[in-house]
Amino acid sequence: MKDIIRIYPDPKMSAAACAAFIDREITRLLETKTFVSVALSGGSTPALLFRVLVDSYSEAPWIGKVKFFWVDERCVAPDDPESNYGAAKKLLLDPLGIKDEMVFRIHGENNPADEVARYTSVLQKELETDGVIDICLLGMGSDGHTASVFPQQISLMTTSIPVAETKNPYSGQRRITMTGKLINNSLTTIFLAHGKEKKDVLKLILDNRERESFPAGFVINAHDGVYWFLDTEAYRLP
Ligand code: 6PG
Image 1 (cartoon, rainbow, N blue to C red):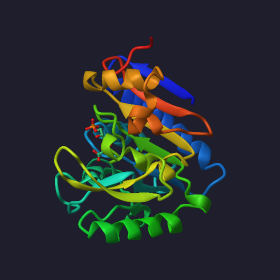
Image 2 (cartoon, rainbow, N blue to C red):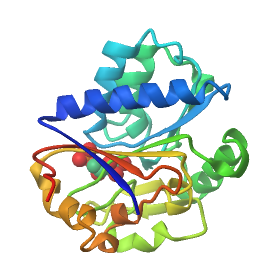
Image 3 (tube, rainbow, N blue to C red):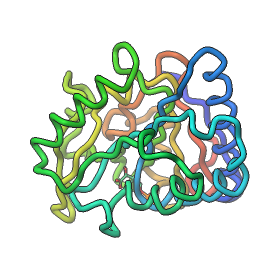
């Protein structure tokens, strides 16, 4: 398992480096593709990345050539403060002028079982052959969850189904999430994680001591390895 670990003095520098990497990856992929698929995660960390992308890449030639998907979504309406899509729309999609036809949100307002089926078919239709996400952007919780796969549902990292319904075990909030089947099929896999609350789990994962105790530890990328954009609060090299 290869990890490409990049550590920065603070979250802003980590997010800026992550944005530059994403820009380079999209540009490279568009040399041979007409569009690039990017799957976004939720939570608070991506807001920093979105700000850099809006401030520094709003004139990028790839704007308009990216199809946006979500790694996971809370089972709430799109205008709910908890909505991952709602946050991305406000902080990234609208400021960059991304057209609706390039946005494939998870309908958190739908019946979860119905939405799992709907989103699965959207992914099959919109992603090219064998459902490969070009760039999968992940976060990690302090319990080592990623997407909406919590430690209690760790079997979803090795399931054969691409999308599943889960529940945040702490709040009971229902979620829709990509599983390891899709996440680990991505072309480029990026974690963006900051802060000391993630330090203990990151150490166990990246020092390969207890990697498979956590859903984030099950994330692999057979093409390149998994990129980790971190700050020094979250991880220091051994
Ligand atoms: C979600 C995310 C989730 C997130 C982690 C980290 O819907 O909450 O997809 O996996 O990436 O919980 O969240 P923070 O960025 O808020 O630490």
